Image (cartoon, rainbow, N blue to C red; front, side, top):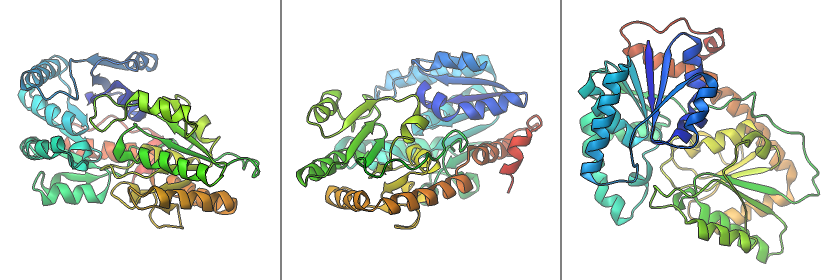
Length: 391
């Protein structure tokens, strides 16, 4: 049995779906990763997993270029002949579902982890694209033997209310999961050192990056010694991305310490106290929040779709800040700077929630359950480690 996993970056497949591929292979399935070229794809070979590239510009709006991408993907699927293709992100869901139909792939799973820039932004480009994307989603998502996986109830309701896909084809799996053994709380550090606050995400405006930087400026003005760390890189394929020059300027001004891409996230998270994501992006369930939760960090985010799946109630398992509100973020951070006991208490509660709800073994097990709804023959025997995923 062959399973294809298709995403718009090799970075996403390597960082978010490698464990799924490894579990499938451990059970006898042949897995092929499909993405545009990138610097992470070669790493799959170290795990005995094949990686196949295709020409795809995820920022392109050129109809001829997009038609060429779909044609190339169709040819690739005819050559690989997978029993099931799992597509990630909105664009890949549309193209993967269409190419699967043209190439005769019998089963399709579309993962729509947040509705992304087109639905999150109120810019002219996003508003123009929205009806086009909705039409494409309506025409492709619910066709044939397929399921749509969403990460939060808000997205499930939005897809259903917009008639993009029928309720019976939607499955809710909260997050892409986190390895709760790899991400562990660290021992409490010296309470006399400065509070360390991290934002780890693609450097997009809707992620609340500007508010994070402005909160740092406000605390500096007040004479507060709080360390603001920024992990992640600009995303040239997204119109909402900050430019590298702007991010570097924040560093020169001493507002943030920019770390760029970080390979060893567990080590970084073990060195900080607070994970902040004041996002107003249409998130699925943000990976940085569940990694921070598993690491026992105090979380600050917004009460918006995706984010509220991790921090469910302000003051109980994290803190919630209004979107686009740098002064409120600064005020919360000043409070935490003065009250390290609250930092530790909320971090412990976040860890409890991560173990109970976001363990990647649960997520992988539920994902394989969705596969088995569609496959004509069952998957090979599931490994014992996944039996805990059964509810």
